[in-house]
Length: 427
Ligand code: AMP
Ligand code: GLY
Image 1 (spheres, helix red, strand yellow):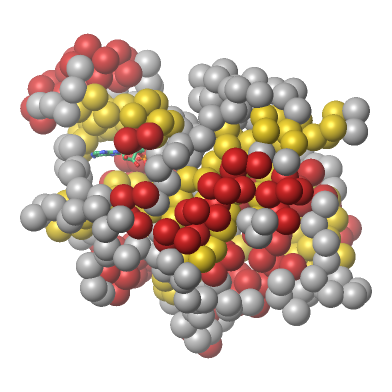
Image 2 (cartoon, helix red, strand yellow):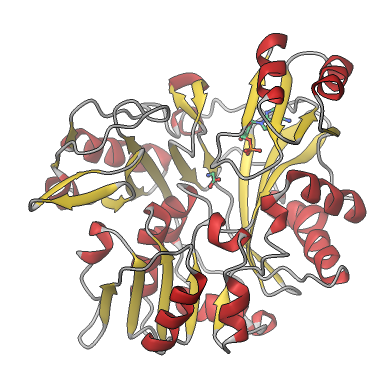
């Protein structure tokens, strides 16, 4: 099978790597890919892994590339091209796509749309008001009281949400958005659960946890994600079954009922609150950096799995097969991320880190004058597996310690509370 992966981040690096581990995948083309993907070694003789330049916002160019490559499957990584509807012209050209249609991707593209789907499907989520004027926003903010949760309705790369007890800050964020959602505050630990779906059948992965804030102890601004781990030793029994039954399957069924079936990866971000589980958000693609933590433990060959979803044959797929043990991904971000990440800083130490057993997925990197340099906010995700979270964390942080980038930032507490058994479920 020949697979074309669209995107250039850490998630795409992890996807390309995992696809290359599938013996049925003879070629992976990443467009545009990144220096980490370009350096990937094929898993067996005769397999090829290559990068091709493309502007992923140019749909005609992507269709032309997919046709030229003669790929059997296109996997679209990031949300922006999905929400812009890239899957549609690819499917119209007769190419199997892992990723939802433009209409179905609205589940991530519009928070108001997602709330509407959840209401119709009786999926538990926070109560929210959709506001279009500062007066409406102020009314909703005062109706809920602090802490205030204010969400830009549109796509904002994980940075459109403000959670604050400062009323002025909440009002100011609302005023800066065209349409805004004011939501009740949800307490309790957060879970990311990804499901592979063909629009009918739902195949959940194992749960992960993501760290959205920049600094240790969940301080600092929200980011795209500073690290992740899987599985969750503290999760209640039957959590995956419960989320599948109450959230994922009803959502997939409702999207089909509306005539906009969702196929691809449905990402549920949830809070386990004192009143039960609540959806915080849906995303329409693999999460970043959860994917970098999850895929090294997935034993089911990824190419066959994504192809089955893309062609409506997930029903025949047996449940996913996972390695024992745990996996931890720690993001190394550029100086001044997320406000104004600095580019052009030299990156060293990746080879030494990998020699110690970690896998380093590239996100914001580039090669300039033969040197690897920073070229984005989140630069690398350093991932390690181990027999438990403690071992995986220690290995991942040993890897992080070998990597040198001037002014870089990382959290030191990814998976720490979970490995110490300190995560408490709300009562
Ligand atoms: P989102 O972009 O919707 O995932 O929100 C980003 C982060 O903001 C989430 O991962 C949560 O940590 C936080 N957040 C979002 N909505 C709520 C809420 N209703 N209550 C508490 N925290 C929230
Ligand atoms: N891990 C958060 C995201 O992918 O949106």
